[in-house]
Amino acid sequence: MGDYSKALEFYEKSLKIREKALPPNHPDLATSYACIGQVYNNMGDYSKALEFYEKSHKIYEKALPPNHPLLATSYSNIGGVYQDMGDYSKALKFYEKSFKIREKALPPNHPDLAGSHLNFSACYERMADYTAALKALQNALKIQEKAFEEGNSAFASTYSWFGRVYRNLKDDSRALEYFEKCLAIDQKTLPERHPDFGITYSNIGDVHRLMGDYEKALSFHRKALNVQESVECNPLECATTYTNLGETYLEMKDYSMALIYFQKGLEIREQKLPKNHPDLGVIYHNMAKLYLATRQYSMAKKNVQQAVEIAQEKLPSNHPHLVDYKETFEKILKKL
Image (spheres, rainbow, N blue to C red):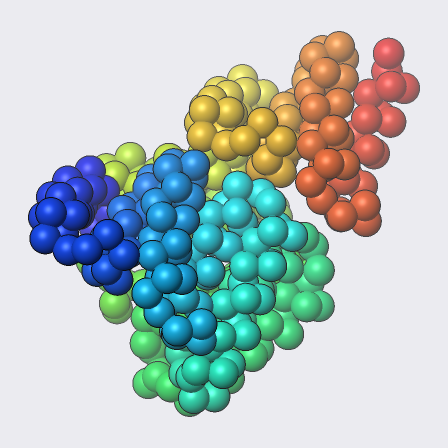
């Protein structure tokens, strides 16, 4: 249910016992470190997550043969943190190491191989290589269809990523179809108020915004917040919902509400993410558009410059975000 502080307490107690009872390079110690790393990752504390995942990995490297599946999981965990921190090329390197081990160590339709393809798709989606993202998703889905019964919870994440890619490709109806498929599985397989509902509701809300149905968009974003504000979830998930709400109000020309939600989202992201994270670029660009609409041109320029600087450092030169940011910059310069 996302009770991270309790999980952390439990894992730390377990670790203390293992540290006393086991030799320093015992694989069970590595498992404890990895579990603690995962909790920190879910809480959005990425530097702590990386610290524990790397401790775990060092032990696995000493204790296990080089093609052991646990090493693959370890590489995948580290890659996931780099992805969340916005370092996509580094994430891909770790995902590739993980995949190479899994290809050698596992049967061809093992679910962990689908997991590797999902990792690739997530990275490619963030880098705006949508062709590669779709190919990786199709590879994941093929394996899952052989490995699982229809409606298995494993499909939810795959459908969600399909939705994200199609949303970026501006195929809104297909994006909505996949997000709704994801929601249907969540409703059958997850407890009520699970943090994943918040993500799915907000994704659905965002597609309704893109389709111009603002009331429906607001309704789904509020559903997302009802979940996210009532359970212990990753604060960055709340930040995304706040940002999505801000974008909806911006398009409705309700600038005061848009500003409230952008500031809420920005506060969390500035607190939790590296200063050059692409998700900060997104919110600076949103703020720039808001200030442009309300004729506060110097504030608009300041925000869009921050967005452009981040995108130039962290994203491919042809990334749609960078193109959008530069276009907004041009519009602002014409007003000054």
